[in-house]
Structure formats: C-alpha cells, structure tokens
Amino acid sequence: MDLATLDSVDEDGERAKGWVFWISKGVCTVINLAFFCYELVQMKNDRLDYLFDTWNYLELGGNILYQTGALMDILNERVTDVNRLVISGSVIFTLAKVVYLIRVFR
Image 1 (cartoon, rainbow, N blue to C red):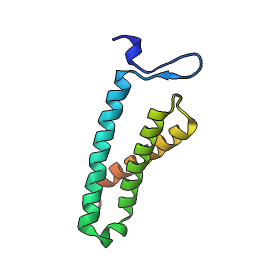
Image 2: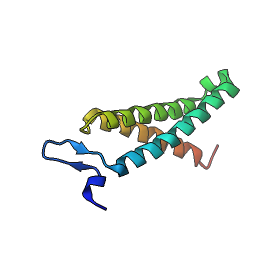
Image 3: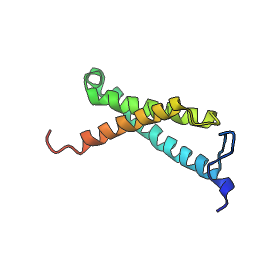
Image 4: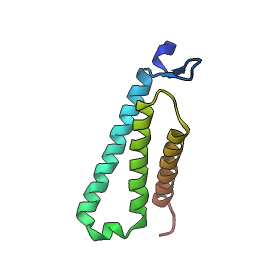
C-alpha cells in the first residue's frame, strides 16, 4: 500500500484524501443513513409518543451530527476545530445511546 492511498498532510496542512478515506467515509455514511431511516420508521409508527422519549433526541442528534461532520470532512481540505467538535458531539451521543442499550436496570 503506498502513502498516496492514505490520508497524508503536506507542509501547508492540506490533506490528500486517498481511497481508504473515501471507502471508510462511504461505508460509515451508509450505515448511519440506515439508522436514520430506522428512526424515520419509528417516528411514523410511534407518532406523538416518539417526541416524548428523550433518547430519540440523542439518536437523531448523533445521526445529524455525524452527517454534518462527514460532509464538512469531505468538503474541507483541512480538519478544522469545528469539524472536530461536531464529530466529537456525534461520538458522545452515540456513546450515550450505547450506554442506554446495554443498561442492566430498566
């Protein structure tokens, strides 16, 4: 594997996005869109009850933040602080969802 296929940063701080970047970003985006579609199905089925469950906001927030961060990552040549914050927020929401799913006591 040559270095041109991976993310590499030159002296100006600009990235060369290789095929690993595009494949990983595409796979993660497809998975995230599947979860988002599942949330839409839940909205349709639960109607008003969906709005009163706090965890649904975490799930939607994580999905929206990831899609925003992925779009910013694709469009920007440099990884900005705002991009890091958006992706970090997405990770925090996702971790909260995981903790909710694996909790012992309900």
